[in-house]
Image (cartoon, rainbow, N blue to C red; front, side, top):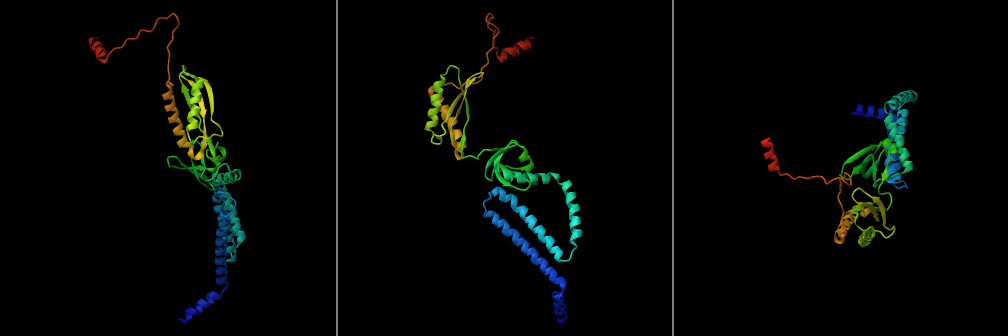
Length: 286
């Protein structure tokens, strides 16, 4: 028993044990410092997207420097280690050019701030809520509750539409009525429906735009405004209420028509309606 205690005391008093203890303390201090910086980010003025992007980067840098410092205290030759790290960095650089491009693109997104976490965006045909802005990609949740991962480089190169950036949205209703209808009467009905809807904003005012003469209808756009939180419910209500108002006023919403015309002096086309039974009989006789 006495010999074991002597060996423990000798180990604790040796220079190697002191170096190991010092390296452990450095590692613990580095982890604590990284945690402190991450906590400070959360209390700063940065938005959630910036915090999500900077937190892992700060952790990697601080812990990496701490590990190198600890290895130096253990007596490792740092010149050899740094030389090997340089060769490894070059190899990894060639092997991970896409990842490096995504990381750099992430910093550009952080500087430009085209969207934030919680915004609804459309990019590459995908529409959904931004869940996270990471070092390599942006993750969105679609309306059908699917997760879509979009690389930062793609986000930087693509056209991104931020649907909920501004507090209000305009509903562009593309409508059409029969050629016999009075456009002025149609416009008054549309404004009346918008005025009665409590979710429709008075400012900006709705506008009515007559687009022109379509193939089967007089085409126009009616565009009222609402707050972004009510957009989908407002869109449903407005279409239902305008359809009901048109029906009550006897206004026809036409379906596509086609007219066959062969000239003013041509006789009408002969049309013959044959039943299925008669057709089958004629076929049997042949």
